[in-house]
Length: 186
Image (cartoon, rainbow, N blue to C red):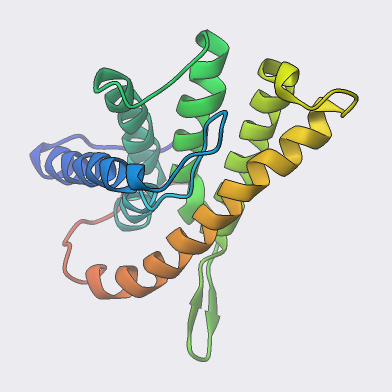
């Protein structure tokens, strides 16, 4: 579906974005996580940058590699294969889809619709994980879906705001300095 050409230049840029993701993961460990996981972070910014600068296929690949590297470095906490899929693989991969959603030109900048939409998709994947895999954490008598909606909203909204603001400041400045021709996609 997405055309991706993995030449030396593309692989170098992708490695840079993965490295930036991991550095930001480590830096944001200083912010306390919620009891069952999830915290406000800026580590998603490199995935968004990759997707917008190189194209969605590259963004998806970088998201998947970031998930794998988190496991390799012991940064990921998981509770079985479904947890791996719903807590790491799908949420990070879906961020690569951001440039598929058209940005809206405003008088004083651009509204990056794709960041909001892909973060909403990420949020609902985490809600699914919380309701299906972590239902026992819901307070007694509370519907696991309602609990998961609230629990995951806390850190996903914070991450969305932080990532969006920094992306809106950084992207216009780097889009002309990174000379990579994004691959076309239907």
